[in-house]
Image (spheres, rainbow, N blue to C red):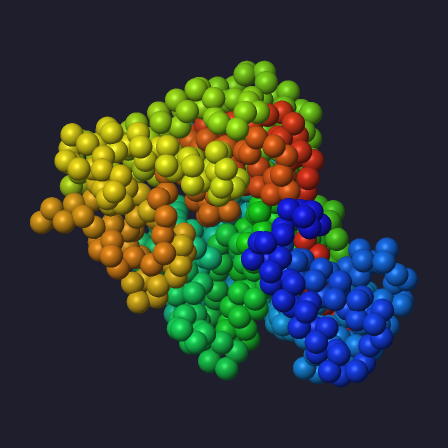
Length: 639
């Protein structure tokens, strides 16, 4: 587990919640008169640790991690004797559950995990769907064996450093197109999980898959969804942008809108409109950026999908997991194995020999065989490009080569400000301010052109690992705000008055869902004058264009020149500047740095010491979960 020491958590909301839960557990057990004084002490310690683990994103707690206090069998026996801990076979209304492998859960998380596993296995074990000959021909036309183009680069666009045709000629394996195989797998199976980093072809695969589904069933009801508003909007934009090669009749039937998951399910003050008892009226669900799904939301979403509908999850197993409990997508992506029967079916669809289809080795064995595809080939960056090499070194846990590449300065797409001071150095500060130069110039040129200003703001972003401290979101936002206010003061009298929070050009991020306003956590808007000169905040509209919301009506929000790496998921920018804390920190993980670097399309800069970067790369996130075990159990029950 990546967790802070108990001393550093004292007084935090997580620590206070853990203390309250532990105290409540002891009081409950005392009333039941089920424990000795020594057992009560063990119960208090275990309940406290479980609550902290949940706050840190773990679904469960490995009792072996606590066994230093007592024998593992004795600890398990004491917990079961307390009356507060049940087993999967006899969970009852007890607040905690311990499984046969000594994983301890809060009851609700065990329930979510079990329900999610059962729903997934029902989809995974459904009989393969028939694919007609016309769709098979279309599939092979979309992915021609010897003249394949880069999945995320239409023919009319330059490919950059990747010579695709040369690579195809040099490698016999190029005839096996994993984008085509993933599309065929999703046509054949009811559950499909596609994992790949930025630039590996997920979007082009999705567009071709949607076209095949529509061609085979013109009335197919397809819902596109993502965890955040930004990711949902980008999903719509990229699907439209990548669909130029499709026949007009199919393009006309592509989904015109993408939903946040909360909007799709119909969030209300008391829960969701759609659930297991009132399912969505759809034939296929596609979820992008699925690595952001936490356990609870994933369970509620998939239970709302009809049993006969396809489920297609796209994401990056190497990115940060959800802020809330669980690493659902990472767990589900663990095993890309294919059965011989499935290989035969895919070979028929793709015009291949089954022997050519050799999936990668699994990270962990999973019951979700015949459901998972990995995209490991990056078409955005050449293998020897700065960003591509850095991302690969981070993902592979190679801190030495990563630092050597950063220090060489050989590729101008990657810059490194090697600094360990609390305050950013002058060069970092200069880059921070220069990054928003085009945005500020667009504001000064024409503050009424909301579309141009929004586009300029989206080119660059400051990404921080933490909220507080001199290199955190709050401090960096304040510094850039001061700079922006001074530059814009001539355009808007009073904009440099710090007593007034609102000024032309202030970017804000929504931090709380507001279904009535159709604003969701992570949405970003720009403060601009409307036609009457009144300051409004302009947000991207789901149907295209922009819509204005009065500042006074906004839900909880913050200035958004800088944002956390977590909040940046689902977004891409031409350039990013990543600011890490001056000291080693438990929040600095391999996944966080990989996610930050891969938000950049063309240029990335990192401001941090070598020690801090190495610590992040050498610290993979480990979230305790029993989802793979629950999947095996669900599979056994289905046999």
